Image 1 (cartoon, rainbow, N blue to C red):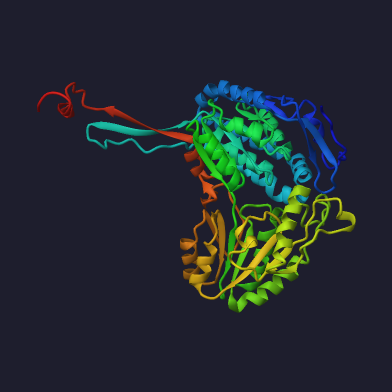
Image 2 (image 1 turned 90 degrees about the vertical axis):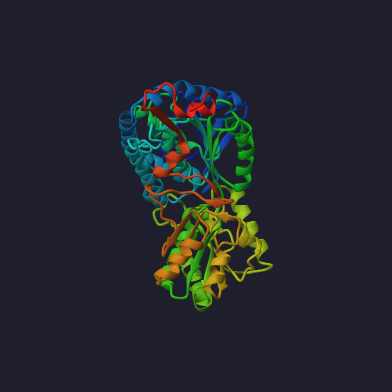
Length: 511
């Protein structure tokens, strides 16, 4: 059953793209065969956007078969040919930028200024970066390391990649999964979150328009339990890349290891924001509000735990609350909006539950409620600042994934760094100080895959993104991502042309 929903065309001008279904297999849209449907909902209004047929195991099998059939031709293309295709892809994405921005805002509730200025340009830049990187799949230079042989290292594609992307950055996460994989010569089947599939499907359509061969990029839109687990456990999938919660990541690892496939996990985060007493207070306050509220806090690298050295603590709390109160919550399509809704009412209620439970042991300084009036039908929640929580409390230790910042004081530098490391996660962190030695110590001792100094959240295509500890392993973006999506092969040539080699005596004969 295809239902275009009741979202107005000005909010989603690309709506007719999905009349043929929400699965993209071998270069065309098809309907899912699970026998069940799902409705994409605009979280700002509660209006239905699209009802589509979910993917089942048969759809996953068809997508994997298409990717497997496309693999020899795509892997056999020259780096220059793959690079040219990706450059064309980047150009098509740039041409379709406004469609992508509106679709992303509609399904996620992101303000248009975020999708126009962050999500879409970042995705176009990723495509351009990997277009260039495709020409630089290099191994170690040739050399005679044994004396009698010449060795060199090849980087070869793995095969069919089965990836699962989350709902918080559907477009960017599709790009982070797909682009390095296909730049390295792999083919891919991506399962987006079923609540936010629109831009992943548009991304695959744009690839076809750019001339990337059918079957290189396939999208299956279904539930994690049915489509996701079947994809991860598929015997013809050589690698799994997953971004999502640590709890689900553990299940992905269990399923993937049964077939001994390559595994890349980018999991949850609880990023510390460490403010030393010599920091620029205004800069730290602005950084904390921006870093905590980006994407309505639905970001695994968002600033969630601000540790502020005692001399600055009270001023930081006061100024941060005041700045949070100026943030304009509203319709994502209104130009004056700073903060849109959460992705769903379920997620909004989950965030509200954390805050409501915290009232018994901490102080809610500002926010802590859903707005009313014109916004009552949407999944909105006000920017929230919580102070005076204990280090072992739920709001400090657990990933809330909403517009909530918790602030705690510390006394010594040793204590601040210890507290920053005191969660299971290790994805990102920031340190705020005018002292280069103090900041340098923080970058060395904080256990996280990315540590910013006097800023929080910026990412760039040239640098890797990935975590420590329960935040997973492996890297997205950058040339380091090729370590995830290629196999390393050592090739060794004999240079002596001698039939009876000296080492043979260890098996037969004498010297």
